[in-house]
Amino acid sequence: MRSSIASFINGMERLDFKVIASLVLLNIYGLIMIYSASAYGCSVSPKYNNDPTYLVTRQAVFVAAGFVAMFIVRRFNYNYLRKWAVPLYVFGVFSIFLLLTPLGVQSHNATRWVEVGPIRIQIAEIVKITMTIGIAAFITKFRERMIYPVLIWEIWIFLAGVPAVLIYIISDNLSSAIILLGIAFLLTFVFTEQWKLHTGIIALAVTAVVVLRMYLKNTLPTQAELNNMPFRFGRFYAWIAPERYEKQGHQPLQGLYAVGNGGLFGKGLGRSIQKLGKIPEAQNDMIFSVICEELGLVGAVVLIALFVYLIYHLIRIAVNSDNLFGKILVMGIAFHIVLQALINIGVVLTVIPNTGVSLPFISYGGSAVLFTMIEMGIALSVDRTHMVREVKKKKYEIALESRS
Image (cartoon, rainbow, N blue to C red; front, side, top):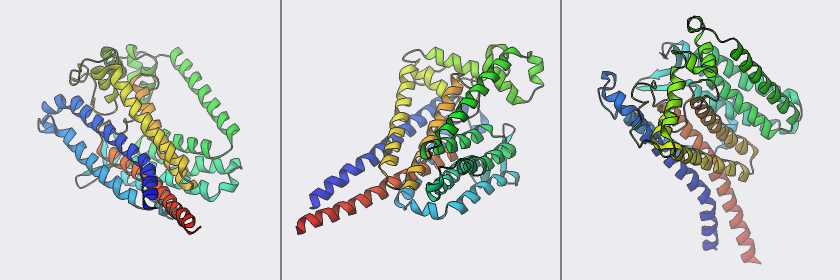
């Protein structure tokens, strides 16, 4: 009996181990590339004490804290999140207003962080988690009524729209607002049967993008005219014609040069030319371009494969769970990772306009990796709770067999 249960547990834990292994590999990949992208800039900057390891050391501390937090969260029963969904959601929304207090920290003309002692937290990361929990609890509670489109609109407008609008207005963070709306849209698409409504929204969005691109292409301003426009116009026009605008098109062009310079196998780790001042803060949202230049197409494909491997196993956790709340939670977390990765890579390849979205686990950013690892802990908690339930069921079945 014990051997049967042990073999069953081992089979169940393989999925848990694969997720953890992929997270270890992604974070190691990220630390290596953060050091490669930032070492030169840190070594010549008094801001970083002329220490080439300054940023990678800070990131390593947050990665370690993230793994500790992940394993702690994994031990908790995620179902408690459903009971606390409303206060957690309210906390997430009201945390946005902390950006208006003295705790708010401005960087690059935007206030997106709060600073508590030595720790700087990006508020959008908190909101992504609390909003996902809120949507999961809402859909679970009204699962029988999700056939009505009005409930879908309530999720889009209130649960996702309110924090998205606040994030945009208060922190001027359009990219995070889009990700919040994207997570909500994908969750309602998967867990409701309103495919006509979702298809219509997708068609409208695609049409709007095509029309916008045609309009921008036919109304290209001069460099002087663009300099007098809001910065977001610069990002859109630089997306259309980066070579036309020396200022606004500098970053996307340098990123493309880096991608092109890498070729199939890259120049070699640490040998990027574009990171030496040509790509601003290469360790952040443009780190994928450094990866392509140093490790080539092969290195980029390996990284994408790691993301696909992680997402695949997150989806398996969601599918295996017999709890709707757990399924939605894990899928929301998976959608968050997918959206950020696709947007970041799309920006580097100039498929979409520059958004400032970081690459999960890879880009420099302590609070981002910490809260993403907490999300991974929630996903592993769903898997663990399912495993414990299945083990109890297996024990009961074996006990019945032994009696008969």
